[in-house]
Length: 575
Image (cartoon, helix red, strand yellow):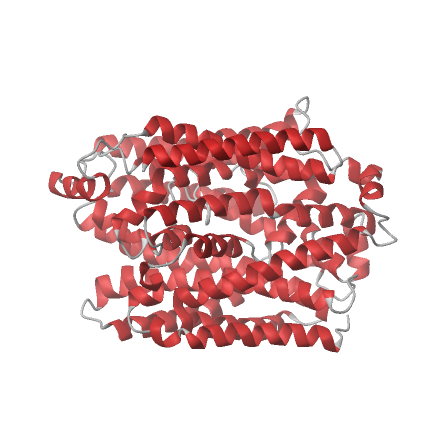
């Protein structure tokens, strides 16, 4: 594919903008670790909310959605739509608690909530486990998507893609800190939304597609448009709807959808001006992430079924691409090759922006763990603010290097998603309850983390064997892992002693004050259900407007508006 002059001008211009933002805020961000990792805790809800959305729009996200649609249909997205329940739980029960804690990273929570050497060990271990190893796996998956896009759209090799894309994001992440990430995220989100919507409109109106009505009436596409699986087919209903809604959302730890909040979502809540800004930021994120953004990717995924009906047609279109990379998630970048000059530049910029926003967040978040929860906590407590920032910048570069190397060993976006789900299976309920159940202690978390990892490793190796020791569908593997892990950590909790009374009293006083832990739970539960119903109704309303089911779409919109009013009332009653 040949890019025109206007395409290159658009792409290079935004590269320059991102670098300038990082350099402009570098001086203020580099004065100490709180400025670098939390931007002085004075960020407004709208900037934090947009940043959360931009971060979850990685370069691999539209590829993943398109792949799911080609394999399972639109309803296949319930494997991640179900995480809305997790997000709304954070909005109504945990956002204020995180901001109230006043900590620098969510791992600092361990020594705020727990006592003894086991709490310190847990904090240090997870700083490396999550901040480095787990984080690198996530970024490698994003790098994989960039490699596929770079080859399909530019004919670049894997190494060339990473050498071009990585330095810019490392520069503004390393110099600008969280504030640089937030500001570039804001620009990147706008580019990403404009690019994806505009590209969708163009692709749908291509002669080969013939407009939205012709697209949706094509038999192969019509079979994939349902937003709910056929309830008479348990082989679809159970893995794609029942298990995600009944088990997955509360039991699995997944970046951006941690039960009880955590990771880079917690980082942004901790950087908010106050508790209200933390709450509104998280609410906006959940609305935009689940209801507003997916439909352009869905439509392009459906359109790809007409242009590339199978993997063989994808391979034929890109004969020089490594056959191991030719999976259904390749369909999204393949469809973008039909875009005209100008629009192509904007869309490519949006994909580069998506790559950069996700990578920059994970680099800043991961380095915050390395600095705050490992280096300063265990190696150099006397480290100055500038020294901490320097260590953060070095760890940023190192993590980017290893993520790029790991990307060469992955094949499909869905592989990384499933691997991360399995590693975190069974730990979610613990993260939800640890704020309220005083018996939970560091050994509970260590047991949950260890057992879930062992089970995930077993099933991963088992799945790679020519003759597996156990033949079991992936969704039942998840259920079994959740059951075993949950039973083990609950038993460990009951068999071990809780943290000392002084630590628990200090934690409860800081987080809940003199009030009951369960004050206002009734209104919070009402708000939670209103949030879940409201966002799902918004998601389905947009879909039904696209499908020309106008009456149903207006009805769903009305329900969403009513839910919005209930949410506002819930906030007013629980302030």
